Length: 338
Image 1 (cartoon, rainbow, N blue to C red):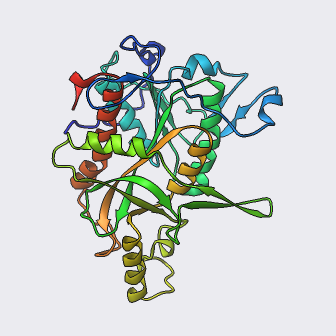
Image 2: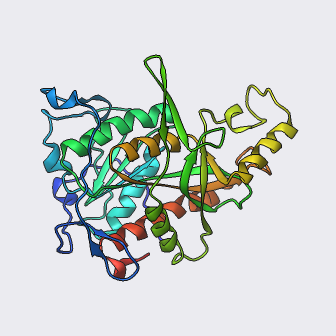
C-alpha cells in the first residue's frame, strides 16, 4: 500500500498547483477499460438571492468573489475530497500530489484557507481536499461555502467524495463501506432540517453509479475488504450512536444491542455523523457524490476504539488509496495505479 506523506508547514509555490491534463477538454466518465467523454454538468445553487449580490464573502473559507479570482484558482477542479480532520486531509492532498506526479514533492503544499482556523483546503491539480470538522452543523457550513465556490468558479463535471472513519455494524474492523444511501437514526433515507419554524425533509440518495464504480475499483486493491451498504448518520457520537461509555447513558446494554441489530437488518453497515446532510446538499446542487468510510470497530462487539497507532493509520489510508486509484482511472492514468 502506498504510504501517506506526513504533514508539513512549508508553503507551496503557485506553479505547483498546475495540472496538465492528458488532452481532453471534458472529464471522462470512468468505465472499465477506456474512459468515455460525457456532457458537462454544472454546479448550481438553489438560491435566487445570490445573483443579485455585489459580492459573496465565503467567510469560513477566507475567500470571496471580489478578493479572489475564483475561476482562475478553482476552475479546473474535477474532484473534491472532504474529511473531518485537517491533518488527514493535508496528508491526503500530499498523497494525491505524489500519485498524480505533479511538480515537486508536495511537502510544501499550501493551505488555501490559512487565513481562518475553521477549515483547511489544499489543491493538487484537479483535486481539491477540504476538511469539514465533526458533525452535521460543521460540514453543513463548509458545504454551503464550498458549493458556492465551485459555482462561482464555473466548475463542471465535479465529483465530490467524503472520506472518513466510522463505526461498523456486523462487519470486521478495517472494512471500507461505500454508502449507497445515507439514513437517519430511524433508518429512513432523509435529512430533516429546521428552517425558520418548519421541518424541511430532503432526500439522501447518493449516486448509485458512482458507488458501483468505486466498488469495482476496490476489487483491484488487495487485502482491503470493501462493501456497499447503508450508512446511518447521527447527531451525536455517544448516546446518539448507542454507546454505553459516555458521560450520560439513559438505556440498557440490551436496548443498545437491539437497536444496532435492527439497524443491521435495515441494511445499515456503518455509523458516522455527516452523511445525510452531505448527500442532501450535494444532490440538490448537481454534484455526483459518494461517501467512503473505513470502520474502526464493530459496534456489536464494543464501544471504544482500542486499535494501535500503526493499525489505525493503515485503516485510515484504505479509503484514501481507493479514492486515489479511482481518480487516476477517471483521468486515464491507469499506468500509475498504487
